[in-house]
Image (tube, rainbow, N blue to C red):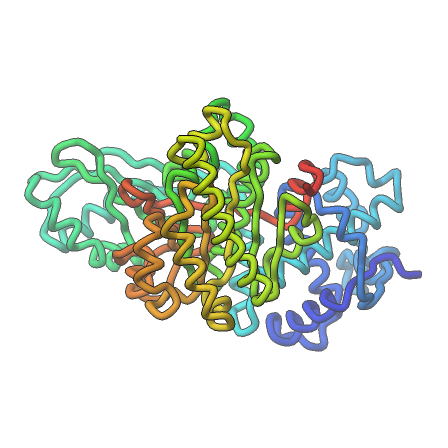
Length: 501
């Protein structure tokens, strides 16, 4: 009797991991299914009910295969039936008594397995080390309030400083979600510049490999902060639940379009008003967390801005990231995957910008925010997300001209751009576009030249990945943040909460 059903995509994921990830082509498929269950249980949110919808059927499995039900012990005395253990874990995760409801247990088990397989598809790439991926996803941050062992970090840092001819002492250490900030008191104030010039040598002596040590201002004489990345096993993961909590606790929303990209290195949530920026460029290589960062910004807007005050246009030429929003598409959310349709939409937005400019001028206001404040216009903000700029302009070059015009003039009319790319080079992000988008977020990139394209300076090539970012807002110093890990379940829950409208 079949209990667990998978889709065709699920089956392909299982086969890929068995043959290309685990290199165990002859191992049973339940090996991957149990790993998928473990991956899903690492997520704090319940799996979405949409996972009950299989779509194109892949295969079916009985509990005998998946949990070992009725298998007892092996001839060597090893336990083979883990049904009760699985039932207990799922009961704790769901808050339901799944020992008393067999159908509910099977339903939750299938949802978790399918969600775990989906996370494998999103997070692991063929050719990458699957065992290392598993270690990072299943073992990192087990303690949600990590207290890293920094007992010898001060001594090692003092020794590293001596390597560049600087004498100092570690006055204090502050552990954030991923970084330990060491406040170093220097014996000679003239050595501040020497420390900044020697950051690469310090990182090398500390054994940080390609990751970098970043300086932090303290406002105290002879004192400098040095942000040192910790091992991934000590990281604290920030979830969609954290994001919702920040928004709920913000009794005085930070502006017209408040967004929360993440927390600073000490763990404090960071919010900024997208309407004042006026546009945003987001760059990062594959696997850096760029797309997850976009989802965090999107959920910030969907949760934190009244429905009648916001419309979203989501352009996704690669047809990979905005599928869930497409299912909820309405007058509030427009999702475009065809590049010709996207180009027409951008051209229409240029015309809308011109119409709005005339309307606001007649009303005697500078911008849409002032018009809202004075009650002379109910026009909604329009925020345009472009998931991959390179793909869009490669297929429809005219789209670049529309984006430049919007970047130049759309701010006052309440139309804002969030443009993302994983190929940050001068051909994709030209000078005209960059000069009109002063606010930037860079996740991990491969080369310092790519960091310069996004941020106008190096540094992003030395980030730790997985949502680690440098953000430079208009008129503000650059800041390092750690992003929120937004899952498909978080997106689905948010869309249900707003009625998909």
